[in-house]
Image (cartoon, rainbow, N blue to C red; front, side):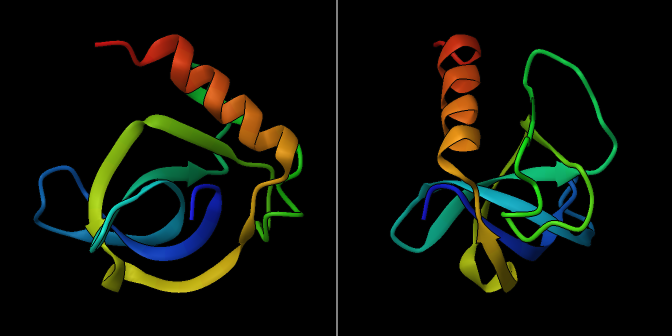
Length: 103
């Protein structure tokens, strides 16, 4: 499931509300998935990954994967599968994750 793009009810960090938006699956868990927000607002922080092949992933606009906007969500929030990231975009996500997310 890593690399799949879905339209989902992406919950706000407060947990009070959600917004319908695209999300990228980062980790597939038994009943849930860890997802990050995808946005067409082209942020350029250390945890933002510009998707070169956004159209191939089923997105309507140039987009950024925001690896600092994570949630663990039940799969019931997934509304529709849009597509999957290309190998190049998947590698960029992995590289940024591995460089920036250290415990």
